[in-house]
Length: 259
Image (tube, rainbow, N blue to C red; front, top):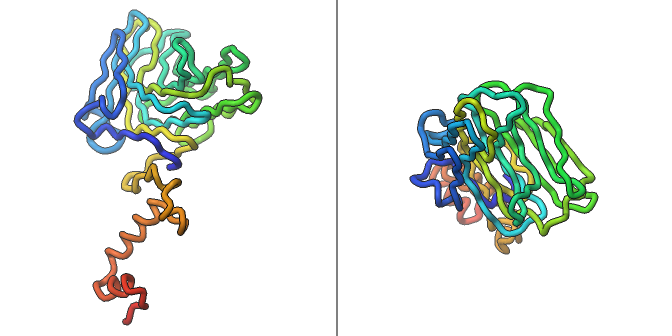
Protein backbone atom coordinates (compact mmCIF):
# COMPACT_ATOMS: atom_id res chain seq x y z
CA UNK A 1 0.00 0.00 0.00
CA UNK A 2 1.18 3.51 -0.78
CA UNK A 3 0.97 6.56 1.48
CA UNK A 4 -1.87 5.08 3.53
CA UNK A 5 -3.23 7.75 5.86
CA UNK A 6 -6.13 5.75 7.29
CA UNK A 7 -7.21 2.13 7.45
CA UNK A 8 -9.80 0.13 9.37
CA UNK A 9 -10.28 -3.64 9.52
CA UNK A 10 -13.31 -3.24 11.82
CA UNK A 11 -11.79 -5.59 14.37
CA UNK A 12 -11.93 -2.89 17.06
CA UNK A 13 -14.64 -2.29 19.66
CA UNK A 14 -16.07 0.92 18.17
CA UNK A 15 -16.85 2.52 14.81
CA UNK A 16 -16.31 6.11 16.03
CA UNK A 17 -13.39 6.34 16.48
CA UNK A 18 -11.59 5.53 14.19
CA UNK A 19 -14.23 6.98 11.84
CA UNK A 20 -15.37 10.55 12.38
CA UNK A 21 -19.10 9.95 12.02
CA UNK A 22 -21.87 7.43 11.34
CA UNK A 23 -24.43 8.74 8.86
CA UNK A 24 -27.89 7.14 8.92
CA UNK A 25 -31.25 8.02 7.41
CA UNK A 26 -33.79 5.19 7.54
CA UNK A 27 -30.92 2.78 8.18
CA UNK A 28 -28.39 1.34 10.64
CA UNK A 29 -24.63 0.83 10.79
CA UNK A 30 -23.13 -1.78 13.14
CA UNK A 31 -20.10 -3.99 13.68
CA UNK A 32 -20.95 -7.59 12.82
CA UNK A 33 -19.44 -11.08 12.73
CA UNK A 34 -21.95 -12.43 10.20
CA UNK A 35 -19.99 -12.10 6.95
CA UNK A 36 -16.36 -10.94 7.23
CA UNK A 37 -14.08 -10.99 4.21
CA UNK A 38 -11.04 -10.96 6.50
CA UNK A 39 -10.66 -11.49 10.23
CA UNK A 40 -13.71 -11.96 12.44
CA UNK A 41 -15.62 -8.66 12.15
CA UNK A 42 -16.85 -6.23 9.52
CA UNK A 43 -19.16 -3.27 9.06
CA UNK A 44 -22.82 -4.04 8.32
CA UNK A 45 -24.88 -1.30 6.64
CA UNK A 46 -28.65 -1.77 6.37
CA UNK A 47 -31.47 0.35 4.96
CA UNK A 48 -35.18 -0.27 5.26
CA UNK A 49 -36.08 0.93 1.77
CA UNK A 50 -39.27 2.83 0.79
CA UNK A 51 -37.62 6.29 1.09
CA UNK A 52 -34.24 7.89 0.38
CA UNK A 53 -31.83 6.25 2.82
CA UNK A 54 -28.26 6.35 4.10
CA UNK A 55 -26.21 3.96 6.24
CA UNK A 56 -22.49 4.74 6.04
CA UNK A 57 -19.39 6.00 7.81
CA UNK A 58 -17.49 9.21 7.13
CA UNK A 59 -13.83 10.22 7.40
CA UNK A 60 -12.48 13.76 7.02
CA UNK A 61 -8.89 14.77 6.28
CA UNK A 62 -6.77 17.75 5.28
CA UNK A 63 -7.61 19.15 1.87
CA UNK A 64 -5.93 17.03 -0.82
CA UNK A 65 -5.51 17.19 -4.58
CA UNK A 66 -5.55 13.41 -4.91
CA UNK A 67 -7.15 10.63 -2.85
CA UNK A 68 -7.82 6.92 -3.16
CA UNK A 69 -10.23 4.74 -1.19
CA UNK A 70 -10.08 0.94 -1.17
CA UNK A 71 -12.74 -1.27 0.38
CA UNK A 72 -14.23 -4.75 0.22
CA UNK A 73 -18.00 -4.98 -0.09
CA UNK A 74 -20.70 -7.62 -0.38
CA UNK A 75 -24.22 -6.69 -1.40
CA UNK A 76 -25.82 -9.32 0.79
CA UNK A 77 -29.49 -8.78 0.07
CA UNK A 78 -32.04 -6.50 -1.56
CA UNK A 79 -33.65 -6.35 -5.00
CA UNK A 80 -32.63 -3.57 -7.40
CA UNK A 81 -35.64 -1.67 -8.71
CA UNK A 82 -35.29 -0.31 -12.22
CA UNK A 83 -33.04 2.76 -12.37
CA UNK A 84 -32.80 3.04 -8.57
CA UNK A 85 -29.36 3.88 -7.11
CA UNK A 86 -27.35 2.45 -4.22
CA UNK A 87 -24.01 4.22 -3.72
CA UNK A 88 -21.04 2.48 -2.06
CA UNK A 89 -18.19 5.01 -1.84
CA UNK A 90 -17.73 8.73 -2.51
CA UNK A 91 -15.11 11.47 -2.27
CA UNK A 92 -16.22 15.02 -1.40
CA UNK A 93 -15.13 18.66 -1.31
CA UNK A 94 -15.86 20.84 1.69
CA UNK A 95 -19.03 22.06 -0.04
CA UNK A 96 -22.37 20.61 1.15
CA UNK A 97 -24.45 18.89 -1.49
CA UNK A 98 -21.62 18.15 -3.93
CA UNK A 99 -19.17 15.33 -4.58
CA UNK A 100 -16.13 14.74 -6.75
CA UNK A 101 -16.96 11.14 -7.53
CA UNK A 102 -19.30 8.37 -6.36
CA UNK A 103 -19.55 4.68 -7.31
CA UNK A 104 -23.10 3.38 -7.40
CA UNK A 105 -24.95 0.15 -8.17
CA UNK A 106 -27.75 0.74 -10.69
CA UNK A 107 -29.77 -2.13 -12.15
CA UNK A 108 -27.15 -4.57 -10.84
CA UNK A 109 -24.23 -2.81 -12.57
CA UNK A 110 -21.59 -0.41 -11.28
CA UNK A 111 -21.91 3.23 -12.29
CA UNK A 112 -19.41 6.06 -11.78
CA UNK A 113 -20.59 9.66 -11.45
CA UNK A 114 -17.91 12.36 -11.41
CA UNK A 115 -17.52 16.12 -11.71
CA UNK A 116 -16.34 17.67 -14.97
CA UNK A 117 -16.59 21.28 -16.13
CA UNK A 118 -19.01 22.19 -13.30
CA UNK A 119 -21.35 19.35 -14.23
CA UNK A 120 -21.83 15.64 -13.57
CA UNK A 121 -20.73 12.94 -16.01
CA UNK A 122 -21.91 9.33 -15.77
CA UNK A 123 -20.39 6.13 -17.10
CA UNK A 124 -21.78 2.64 -16.56
CA UNK A 125 -20.12 -0.76 -16.50
CA UNK A 126 -21.38 -3.31 -19.02
CA UNK A 127 -20.66 -6.21 -16.66
CA UNK A 128 -23.32 -7.25 -14.13
CA UNK A 129 -22.11 -7.28 -10.53
CA UNK A 130 -21.81 -10.86 -9.30
CA UNK A 131 -22.67 -12.09 -5.80
CA UNK A 132 -20.11 -12.24 -3.01
CA UNK A 133 -17.29 -10.04 -1.78
CA UNK A 134 -15.57 -7.66 -4.18
CA UNK A 135 -12.61 -5.33 -3.85
CA UNK A 136 -13.43 -1.79 -4.98
CA UNK A 137 -11.00 1.11 -5.33
CA UNK A 138 -11.80 4.71 -6.23
CA UNK A 139 -9.24 7.39 -7.02
CA UNK A 140 -9.71 11.08 -7.84
CA UNK A 141 -7.12 13.64 -8.93
CA UNK A 142 -8.01 17.33 -9.05
CA UNK A 143 -6.95 19.40 -12.05
CA UNK A 144 -7.83 22.02 -14.66
CA UNK A 145 -7.85 19.79 -17.70
CA UNK A 146 -5.57 17.35 -15.88
CA UNK A 147 -8.09 15.85 -13.46
CA UNK A 148 -8.56 12.09 -13.30
CA UNK A 149 -10.96 9.44 -12.01
CA UNK A 150 -9.97 5.80 -11.61
CA UNK A 151 -12.10 2.86 -10.50
CA UNK A 152 -10.99 -0.75 -10.05
CA UNK A 153 -13.12 -3.81 -9.33
CA UNK A 154 -11.24 -6.83 -7.97
CA UNK A 155 -7.96 -5.09 -8.89
CA UNK A 156 -8.96 -4.78 -12.57
CA UNK A 157 -9.43 -1.33 -14.10
CA UNK A 158 -13.13 -0.59 -14.50
CA UNK A 159 -12.97 3.06 -15.50
CA UNK A 160 -10.09 5.44 -16.25
CA UNK A 161 -11.09 8.99 -17.09
CA UNK A 162 -8.52 11.73 -17.72
CA UNK A 163 -8.32 15.36 -18.87
CA UNK A 164 -11.03 16.44 -16.46
CA UNK A 165 -11.78 19.96 -15.30
CA UNK A 166 -12.71 19.36 -11.68
CA UNK A 167 -10.85 22.10 -9.80
CA UNK A 168 -13.89 24.26 -9.03
CA UNK A 169 -13.33 23.71 -5.28
CA UNK A 170 -10.23 23.69 -3.08
CA UNK A 171 -9.81 19.90 -3.02
CA UNK A 172 -10.92 16.60 -1.51
CA UNK A 173 -11.71 16.75 2.21
CA UNK A 174 -13.76 13.65 3.08
CA UNK A 175 -14.78 10.13 2.12
CA UNK A 176 -17.88 8.06 2.86
CA UNK A 177 -18.16 4.27 2.68
CA UNK A 178 -21.16 1.94 3.06
CA UNK A 179 -24.62 2.69 1.73
CA UNK A 180 -23.71 6.30 1.05
CA UNK A 181 -27.02 7.01 -0.65
CA UNK A 182 -29.99 4.95 -1.78
CA UNK A 183 -33.17 5.81 -3.61
CA UNK A 184 -36.48 4.62 -2.25
CA UNK A 185 -36.25 0.90 -2.97
CA UNK A 186 -39.20 -1.44 -2.61
CA UNK A 187 -37.11 -3.75 -0.42
CA UNK A 188 -34.57 -3.49 2.39
CA UNK A 189 -30.86 -3.77 1.49
CA UNK A 190 -27.82 -5.06 3.38
CA UNK A 191 -24.23 -4.25 2.39
CA UNK A 192 -21.18 -5.55 4.30
CA UNK A 193 -17.90 -3.60 4.27
CA UNK A 194 -14.41 -4.76 5.24
CA UNK A 195 -10.77 -3.61 5.10
CA UNK A 196 -11.08 0.07 4.18
CA UNK A 197 -7.97 2.11 3.40
CA UNK A 198 -7.55 5.76 2.38
CA UNK A 199 -4.35 6.97 0.72
CA UNK A 200 -2.81 9.66 -1.47
CA UNK A 201 -1.87 7.14 -4.19
CA UNK A 202 -3.22 3.85 -5.60
CA UNK A 203 -3.60 1.27 -2.83
CA UNK A 204 -4.15 -2.20 -4.31
CA UNK A 205 -5.51 -5.34 -2.68
CA UNK A 206 -5.29 -6.07 1.02
CA UNK A 207 -2.72 -8.79 1.75
CA UNK A 208 -3.43 -10.67 5.00
CA UNK A 209 -0.39 -10.75 7.25
CA UNK A 210 1.42 -7.96 5.40
CA UNK A 211 3.02 -5.29 7.62
CA UNK A 212 1.10 -2.02 7.85
CA UNK A 213 2.41 0.96 5.94
CA UNK A 214 4.17 3.39 8.25
CA UNK A 215 2.67 6.87 7.72
CA UNK A 216 5.90 8.67 8.68
CA UNK A 217 8.30 6.64 6.52
CA UNK A 218 8.40 9.10 3.60
CA UNK A 219 9.45 11.92 5.94
CA UNK A 220 11.56 10.00 8.45
CA UNK A 221 15.17 11.32 8.20
CA UNK A 222 16.73 8.11 9.53
CA UNK A 223 14.84 5.73 7.28
CA UNK A 224 15.07 8.10 4.33
CA UNK A 225 18.84 8.38 4.71
CA UNK A 226 19.32 4.69 3.96
CA UNK A 227 16.34 4.30 1.62
CA UNK A 228 14.59 1.81 3.89
CA UNK A 229 10.81 1.59 4.25
CA UNK A 230 8.81 0.23 7.16
CA UNK A 231 7.89 -3.06 5.38
CA UNK A 232 11.57 -3.58 4.45
CA UNK A 233 12.68 -3.10 8.05
CA UNK A 234 9.96 -5.50 9.24
CA UNK A 235 11.09 -8.08 6.69
CA UNK A 236 14.72 -7.77 7.84
CA UNK A 237 13.69 -8.07 11.49
CA UNK A 238 11.76 -11.27 10.77
CA UNK A 239 14.67 -12.76 8.83
CA UNK A 240 17.07 -12.03 11.68
CA UNK A 241 14.68 -13.51 14.25
CA UNK A 242 14.64 -16.76 12.28
CA UNK A 243 18.46 -17.15 12.37
CA UNK A 244 20.38 -19.23 14.95
CA UNK A 245 21.81 -17.32 17.90
CA UNK A 246 25.36 -17.24 16.57
CA UNK A 247 24.16 -15.78 13.27
CA UNK A 248 22.14 -13.09 15.06
CA UNK A 249 25.24 -12.16 17.01
CA UNK A 250 27.16 -11.86 13.76
CA UNK A 251 24.50 -9.58 12.30
CA UNK A 252 24.70 -7.34 15.35
CA UNK A 253 28.48 -7.16 15.34
CA UNK A 254 28.77 -6.69 11.61
CA UNK A 255 30.97 -9.80 11.26
CA UNK A 256 30.18 -12.63 8.89
CA UNK A 257 28.56 -15.68 10.44
CA UNK A 258 30.87 -18.62 11.05
CA UNK A 259 29.57 -22.06 10.11
